Image 1 (cartoon, rainbow, N blue to C red):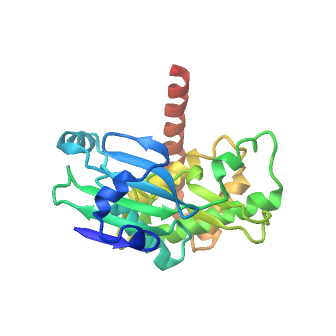
Image 2: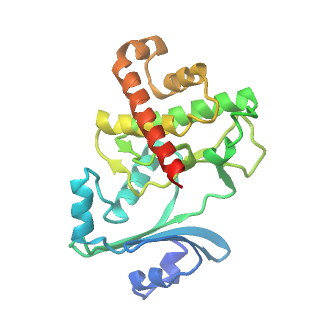
Image 3: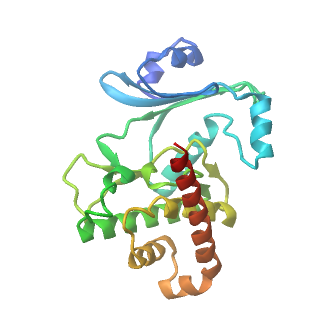
Length: 268
């Protein structure tokens, strides 16, 4: 068993079974699946997000593996990703409680609690009308630079997201939005993987997901070049020469995701 408790949960759950205590927390439920529950709760007037994993069973694990998907087995992936991102200075959530017990991965009970990031707006919501109502150019350029720098730092630190869409980048709005002083945080790391180096396959999947998520918001070729300049540590001319295969692959992968999205929308 592993258990890490910071305040306020260290005091709140002193002498208690933390795994029973986390199950007793109430609040606004965002997701309720057989093996996972996500909710927002408040303690002493502060907001926290709670993710509880109860194991998904061998049948679900096998089904995911057969389909070529890596199943999420518990809270450890998010805990490890948050730790690594803090180590390398990529803004993300702050975890204040983490626990895991049980050796059977199909039945393992785990949880993670993070401080709420508020007030914020995710970049998907921020950019909803950009195709018809373009943002102030300085703001757009600053956001592209910031996301590129953050994702590049993540990948160089060995962290790939696996749900890399602009909705998982939060813009802090506690003060007036200033393109010269933006604060962004990356969230929803429950599927993230942490290694010494990010494999190209997983790097490219993250980049394709991000590219897919901006296809409808009026991004220009110049915007994409700006992102590449921010993401890669090499000069842009060198990047374009060395990453031709990647750029072709991103277009194919993003187009495939977009076609799947259109088919799904047409079926509704």
